[in-house]
Length: 328
Image (cartoon, rainbow, N blue to C red; front, side):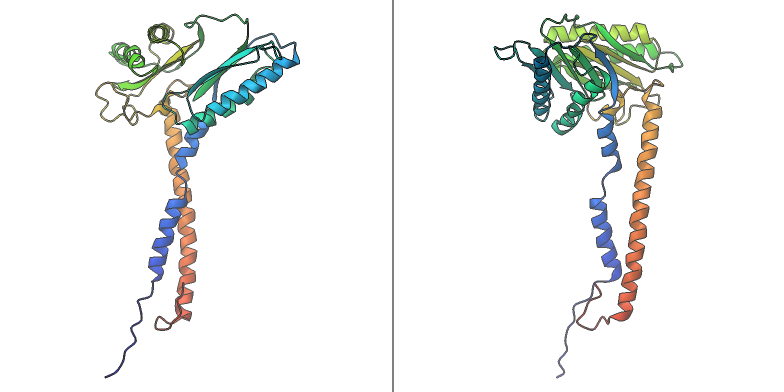
């Protein structure tokens, strides 16, 4: 009998290419995630007091307050604290931050970390009271004794420049806005949902009571109705709550059938402020950028794989499959 040596089948260049493609697919980042994270820190509006601290101790207390607030933002989306107000530092400063209700702890922390630098850039760094609202979070502080405005005081509004065409929009918007008071009362001060192509969002400051929260968002919604009229989007910020709405003629992105109300699966990124009044144009640009970014990344991957394939072919000509060496 003749003895035969059984040689295991060699891995073909095509198999190598498949494995490398799989690895590259796992390693390449998804383009939209980075864009979404950067959108969170876009500035919407700011408020700065005209007076400045007269005591350097107050500035140190403010720095300590910033440190405390930023450190807490990795564990909770709302936190309020006071720095100073003791024998060593009689001047006290109270401040808080709040993140949008749907943000993860990591995204909240990313957003809040931007706020101290943002406030110092848009306000005098020694101002006795300041506030900055980003897309995903806001922070405010004031020295003890600073006069507070009512919870329903209007701070900022943005109405879309485009207007809805056709009949029935006012009734549709009214029904969508009516969901917010109900939603915040059962959603711990936060609600996001959609009704017949209108996306709405509402949130109250973390320590605002249930009844006060409902009244606050009702006031914001009423301002939105009057001030924005038939605009396709509106964003209303009061002292202790805010609401926004955006109308999507082709249906709210991520909202499924969009046959009624509900927050599940709704893309909350549409709450971003757009100067042209509506999320459609902004989201279209984002989608194009994401697609182009994905095509570019895939093109680089394909070019890389073609170079590798050429190298494997050369190795295949040099090495014999029947030998003990592999071309890999």
